[in-house]
Length: 391
Image 1 (spheres, rainbow, N blue to C red):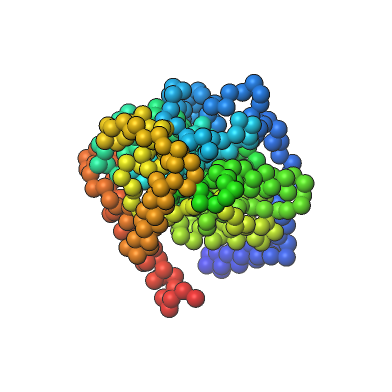
Image 2: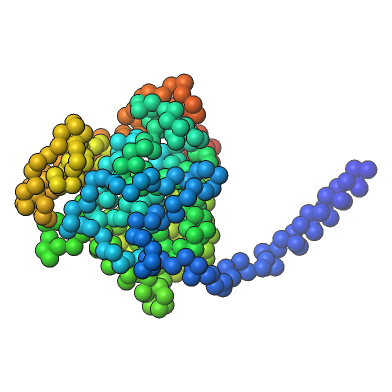
């Protein structure tokens, strides 16, 4: 009996070796497939109102999409930063996990710099199911996101993830939404950034206008075959333009690689397949960890403000403050620079642990404990796999 089992095992091993001989493996080169991008035109039509949200006006996806409500949104964009009426659609995803105040500052920066609010989509990746849209979380809860503020006052959309996603899963989620809408490209942004146009430069072009110029050049070169680009980084990847077709070719993000190295894998595969990773610029982008006081009043001219956070209405409509490079702009620029300097000195992610409330509220977990557990697990795995260190 022992001889029979031994012989059977040897035969199985030999068969396995023949079946999986490396020289016999088929080629895994991606197929040459043509994808239809004409289903949803990326240019606004003459019949289409400019303010239609980029994901539409109706709820869909099992009640996890929340478009803006109403059509009277504030603050008003300064005239010199208003987006052009005739323009391509520029879907911008801003994933949220925690810290509503940081998200608010980021969204206001993009709107003030000319990005159409109807093109902005906050991705609620808090992992709190329907607690945010039902207003079940307190303001001190780190996962609380003010749906009423963003949808009713600022005019941006919110799209929920079904569960808490890690970084690679979130990237695949954004790609999947873009593919479902037949978008050839989309933008995504970190939620902890400060955005301003280069108002100190002449002739003046808004942040968004410069983004449109980069997008026009990128799409023209892609469609003509003159260049093969995968992503375009605005100040590292704080804002990123993504070529969807490139990711169809190389595959999705690897969800089993820890989040601080999964981008190295993904962008490395882009380079291996011959795609360019370009670094471009459109304006000021700061890496921030705290917020300025009364951001509506600081990012927008007084004439754009029906009220401030303090409930005050400003009567100041001086021409100096309603033109580029105003004293208000200079002060805000200096403040955001100081915030970035302090962030780099004190640690990049301190903003993630600023709020300590929410204990016992629906779907709420301990973010600090979760983070510690993750890093402890990572350290243990590294010690087992690389006892002598990595590299």
